[in-house]
Each structure stands twice: as structure tokens, then as C-alpha cells.
Length: 184
Image 1: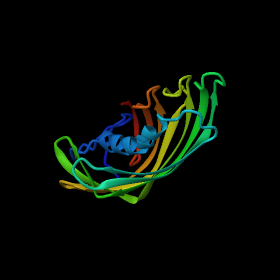
Image 2: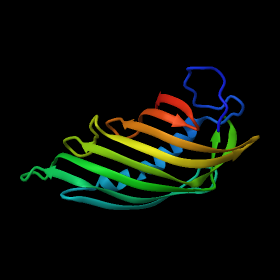
Image 3: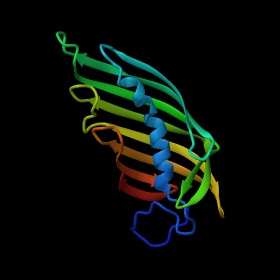
């Protein structure tokens, strides 16, 4: 559990360490969105059924192994094969293995406790490369983070409303029992 001083204030970092929870969320989100590199080559796939098995290396060592699938369907223009609309359902599990990263100049290591679960719904806009406003990802589970004077298991229950490009969005929920609400 992360100790937080003050009341009615959203906090993304622990006041007793240099760990910024936004750095943890960003690493988990980026690994979870690694499937997105595969969908850019979609031409006429109806229905969508993409198996996911990616390993994302940590900037300081370790990795996050992402497995699961993307399912759904797309509507194509019969004459041009252009994507008119679509919906994709995300179901992923991230197994985090000694993923090392920097937060506020300090190196921390993250391991799954036991893993992170990602689910989501993505609506495709015409053209198939942008997401609609109903697109979101839910992240739940736990990680154990160790670093300078820090050794905590942190539980997640967050929702990310994805921006149209799929590169970030609005984050809300709780991390380690602390309310969060920010954009990235």
C-alpha cells in the first residue's frame, strides 16, 4: 500500500520515494498497445481475430510478455475495400519479469504480482487507423516494484479512455488504493 499525505487530492507519486505511478502505467499501457503495430496492415479482414504474443523489453532490462487476442469485425467498402467502421475487443494478460525502468532519475524493477489483465473495446473510425471516442482499456491486477528504499506490491484498477490515435488518453481509477485522474 502506498502512503499518501493530504486529503481529496489525486496523487500519482509516492511522497516518500521518487517513484511516479504514471511511469508504471505508461510502461503497462505501451506494452498493451504493442498489438497495434500488427493491425495497420489490415486490408479486408472480416472478422478480426488476431492472436497476440509480444515481448516488450524494459529500457533498463527485463521484459513484459503480452499474450491474448484481439477479436471483432470491420465493415469495408465493397468497391474500394476502405474501412468504413469496426469494433475490436481486447483481451490480454501481461506477465512482467524484472522490468527495469527509471522514475525521477532512480531505477526501479517491476514484477507481476502475479500479472496484469488488460481488457478493452476499440471502435474504428473510417480509414481504420483512428479510434472513436467509445474506445477504452481497463487495467487490473498487481505488480511488485522494488527500488531505492522502496519495496511495494501495487494493485491497479484503472480505465484509460483512448485518444483517437491510440497513443494515450485519459486515465482514471486507483493505483495502490490512491485515486488517479490524468492525461498522457
